[in-house]
Length: 470
Image (cartoon, rainbow, N blue to C red; front, side):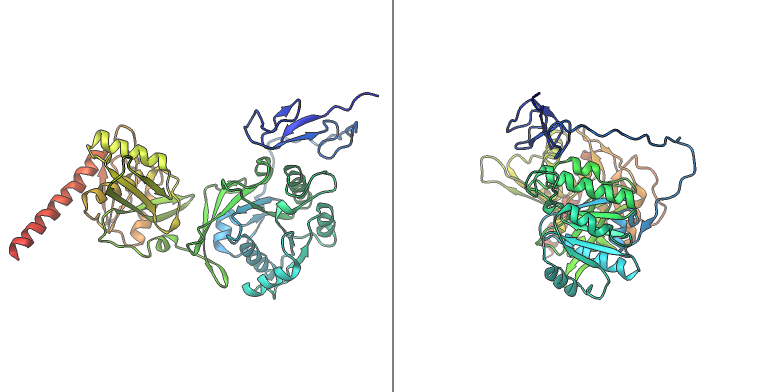
């Protein structure tokens, strides 16, 4: 009898190994290699031959198309993050830290859709039915017709949601608790997660029901399980937020039916999550206009402009190596700006500790914040406050030049709407809106430093004059 051939496949990157190893040679991850039967796939028996395929109908690229119908939840920030609502037949993966509010958000969305006449099924694999009912009562969703089940077996879940009328939306909370009879491994393992997600996606595509899968994240911030899960689903959303702050951000990192890098902002309260229609007012709510080292950055999150305060503190150090502490921004980009300030502007920060913080626990990812960061650093070092009615945005190159950024008009319109009278922006920016606001164009970083230094000298002379008068 011929020996059964097996192969060892990395569940993270798909690299095939001849034998088992603790570390994958392809991606460098540990404990991701699983033995699989090449004839039967996941859970296949030894020597099981694949069934004969059937021919599918081929078509052309031309032809009538229709817009994918969406299910609007009525929660404006959730609809914004998903691109206008859940698409029928799609699979959406929502990840976030434990206790951040994923189940709360989905329970509110399920109740809102149920009140609109949609058939919603909520399957909980982490909590009992009584626990889910307690949350629904706290959120005021107990009066809705959401169908509830507490189950973790994939085959039982599929049999339940397939029985009766097709559901409009199915929520699985969470994918780490699913287990299938076809995979011989414990729940939460790579094989079980991939098998369960594949079965749920297949049901969504065949029936046209929208499927929402909840996933936990690792300590690195990635959704636990194989990365192939994120490639299988149609949209990936991350629910972010700091427990020390009362707001939450739903960030879109992948969406086949809408824009990526879109965000929805929520405020956590004892009655659940509340939409924040104007997040700029939330991030600028407690500003100290007279404090040096603070600059307002006009940023973009997808199609939404967001104004947020950047705070910098430059203080003499007593250590041999100056300290660099960053919260809400990339530390390597801060090191680059410090080097450009020293090389092209003569700003010496080698004997100073530098602390940088983005107010409200917000995180900035775009390079357009370079000009605001540099302004805050120079302002703190000079001890002079920046104009409180100005916003800053622009990208700084290694040569010290200030480069233009995209969507300038949207940033300036948001600043005008919130009462800002001026802006410091790159000199070659296009699409400047007409209005009474003052746009100050900056050609390079030395121009910015000279402006702030000039303000410091004027302030010093004013203090000297007031002292003589006294």
